[in-house]
Amino acid sequence: MSLLRSTFIGLSHNSRLRRFAENSRLGRRMSSRFVAGFRIEDALAAAATLGSQGLAVTLDSLGENVTTPDHARQSAQVYHWLLDAIPQSKLDANISLKLTQMGMDLSPDLAFEIVSGLVDHAVQANSFVRVDMEGSAYTQATIDLVRKLHSVPANRGRVGIVIQSYLRRSADDVATLLSDRIRIRLCKGAYQEPPDVAFPDKKDVDRSFVALTETLLKSGVFHGIATHDPAMIAATKDFASSQHIDPASFEFQMLYGVRRDLQRSLVQEGYKVRVYVPFGEEWYPYFMRRLAERPANVLFIARNMLRK
Image (cartoon, rainbow, N blue to C red):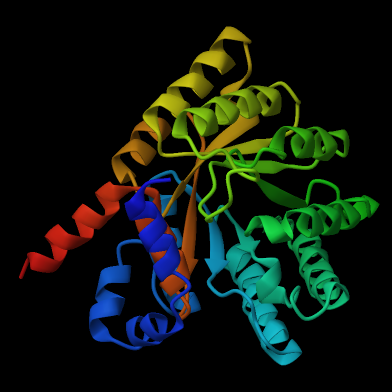
């Protein structure tokens, strides 16, 4: 892991800097590239704009590691509002959430109850809930919860998960999840992990990503291949073509504000692209992880801050 990445991931846990950033005009201005806004209306407006460009979206109300059950239920209420608003706005959209935002640190039973209610709502709304993956301390609990939810017949195909290619365990996890035919978003991973848990070298992370992508594409389940890396995108397209896999049987996923040119070009080529659209007041940890992922993001922010 590069020093720059380690620095930004470390800063993502700095509570004093977080309080300053989330309450300052400068911090909000810096975050605007990667965060759609601070209200539901901002997120829906961004989703509508992306939709007009042929892009689908997943909406994420930012927040994690809540400290009270009331906070967890308040966080869930935002998603219930989104699930009502999506069909009313005629958006090609679904939702993504974090278990620690739903109370996992307080009680796994509380998190299951809250997320189960959201999946029930998604089923009624003909939508879908993606449970995001957080640090490796939560990996097994997240998989267990999603498998339990997905085992309910009405929920099948309505709840999915995220797998990170930098974790050494991910090949086994993918095999387990595919045995249940659970939809997966595959990404590289954005948390700081020890080398015995996650591959420290990019070449190994990339090799894992390509191998897992091939497994997912052959599975017959609709998955999301989440990357901005042209080499990973090319490998995905080449494998799908060589195996005569219909491009409509999977989608590429990218982050709001990152490689918008690539998002548009993939749509023009006939691929489905879903953009992860985060919003909300608690944007700081997410923003710092985006800076950690790509040094180009840091340079972009710096250039734009110097503009008048």
